[in-house]
Length: 331
Image 1 (cartoon, rainbow, N blue to C red):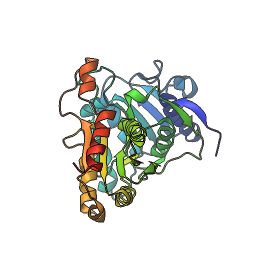
Image 2: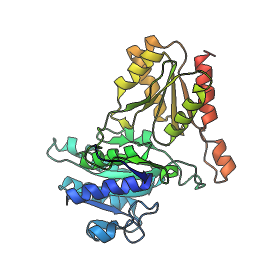
Image 3: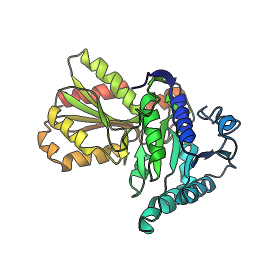
């Protein structure tokens, strides 16, 4: 394995794109402010200078056109990376993604592939209010033909993005806005190319399983560390990929611990945590449960811009701990 370097989350994303674009001339980047400005979150700084305006393409403000172009280019052998900035803006691009890119390979009998990546900055925590904070991953997991991945740290951000760019299907790639400045060791080499559809056990434990991903996984980690001091041994599962989902990893962990808490950043109602709960209930892992499953998620409300109110409607470490304690104590 190559020597790891400490990088910010945003730099790991950029490095993954740069490495793939150096290897494959069919890979290109398209989006608003990705060129001279260097991306709204600093993820594309310097890329225009290296790759030129034909491969780092600044666009007008039209998410529908950007993703329509990407779907068309992908179906003709290119590998576009779309920088959508805020995930909320996907509402404008849903036709291109859901009705064009997603079913194209199926509808044409596998004769056409659609290798495109759509990068979304998602989640609250920056005071951006209700039009710039949504985490809509469950929308995309509903659609056949799309893959959905959500890294929780810089190293996985690098590995998952390189895997997404190489995949021959449309991949929705979630980037927590609060994580862009997160630092961590990154293996920026060919040794670190993730397998989409595979999660990992980050922390082994025997008392309870916490399943999480993306931004919320940090809350789960902090809660697990604090619960250890109270004598509770938490097993932490980072699913990394929502679709396809590593069902067996979750099932085996639940069989081991007999208890489950699911933590995610999106709204609770119809959030992807409910899908995980349903799959556990429908599996043989259900017979190993000895307490009700609990979910920790955002409140079902529009998110305020005031920092104190924004914090109040978001999941917290304390909420995760409370859910674990209630589950372990079978309350």
